[in-house]
Image (cartoon, rainbow, N blue to C red; front, side):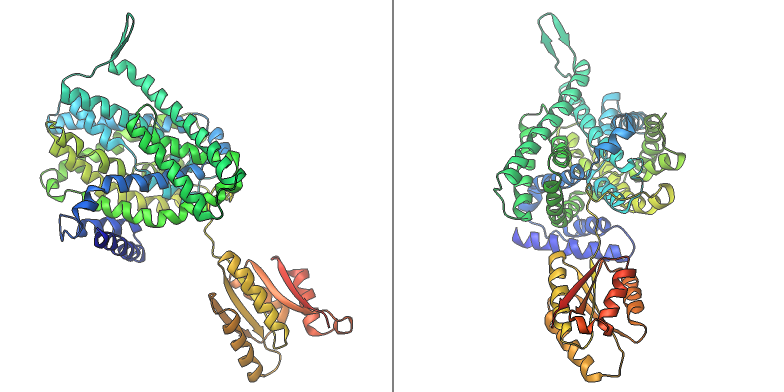
Amino acid sequence: MLESIIWILLTGFFAGQIARRLKAPALVGMVLAGILLGPQVINVLSPGVLGAADSLRTIAVMVILMKAGLGLDREKLAQQGTVALRLGFLPATCEAIAVALAAIWLFQFDLATGLLLGCILGAESPAVIVPGMLRLKSLGWGVKKGIPDAILTGSALSDVLLLLVFSLLLAFVTQGTATGIAFGGLSLSPVQLLPLQVILQVSLGIILGWLTARLLVVVLAKQNWTQNVVQDALVAASVALLLVVLAEHIPIFSGYLAVMATGFFLIEFDPPLARRLREGFNSLWVAAEIILFVLLGASIQLHVLEDTLLVGLLILAIGTLVGRSLGWYLATLGSNWTRKERLFLLSGNSAKATVQAAIGAIPLAQGVDGGETILALAALSILVTAPLGAWAIPTFAPKLLDKGEVDPTKVSVNRRIVLLAAIDTSPLAKQVLTKAADLARRCDGDVVVLHVQRLDDPQGIHQIKQQTKKYLADIRHRFITTSGAISIDILQIAQDYGAAEIVMGKRGHRYLETLLVGSVSQAVIETSPLPVVIVETVY
């Protein structure tokens, strides 16, 4: 098992990086690595790891749904009105019906089996959609109207609906009937119960998410049981995973929706805690993403695709371009979305992966007629739509969505911090470098060390280069020299390298105020659009 984990992490990571360097989504390389490592090709993964694949995928999906919840914006969701709610029901429902009708026509399935296939293919993949939408939010695409938030919420709700219908249809197909319940003289069929089940699962999921968020605020923020971000994320992830496990044993609420709601309410109750957890879950996702998509690739049954490839592609096209497109139109009808923003849903809301991998093989295992075809189509939907969706989201967002202001309180903004340390050959260089190093360590930033030459002083430059290596030994840095106007060069280099702050020195003796270093610092302070940290030595 340890060897398999090493294979998964290393092969998945480097395959993802190769895919990224080829301008493809990293998950494409990870899925291909899973296919290569799995039983279909070289078969190096142990049965224990493959047997635990469902549990490991569950952990990974929990991580990404908590990230989704921690990235939601209540104000943007309220601004959308019922659009997010409609996105949770109409596209998935229309696609499931379109797929069912196409399967009846092309495979001669009965209605129940066709709808069973529709529920599998209609489910959206949080593992693809959530990272894509959070990245759009961090870049500002569509945030003005809350489009990523609406898609995130709708995706979670649609999976709740389709998984409920799937379980109902599976019981009907395998047992010939699905039992309802009776209250006294009132008898409700499973179909009549379905709306109540959906309401119950959604409502209890939200309520449990609210309670869990309250609990985490008390434990992590008010009682201070943890000392750092890693411990915060560990406790929160364990509690979130407990929600998912409880939902499997007590299926009266949606565990995944409860996890997402937990993240959402954490932002409302304690924004500083939410920010820390966002950082922690971002770190967890680095490993969880690799495990999720490599095991996803390992679970794909390539041999069952041979006889259904072309017909399967036709069914996927009918489901997306006919059924889901109709659902998108109805969901956004009467909203303030433009035609381009509605068109973005084609790329941003149609990826499939995790749900199909989780339930695609169940009909075959339960002996449903056509189960092998259903499994093949589930595998095909993963191979086609997951890479396509991961590529299309960042590709078409700049073309179809408007860019707005990023709210760093709701989403992690991935930006490398660069500090500019302006030094000369005086003893102040040591203090400036020490201060820049201290600031860089706090934010895990880079340092650009700038020396503007006034005189030809090779010995002095060599000395400050050696000081730079000494005091910035554990920090990414570069040393630059120029020979222009000092204050102008400092500001220009800061702009060229995207510096967040400028660190420089100033002698503090009143009789030396007219020296160049004093006048330079004053000029930079007066003209710089960036914060300037002055390290002052008084003689």
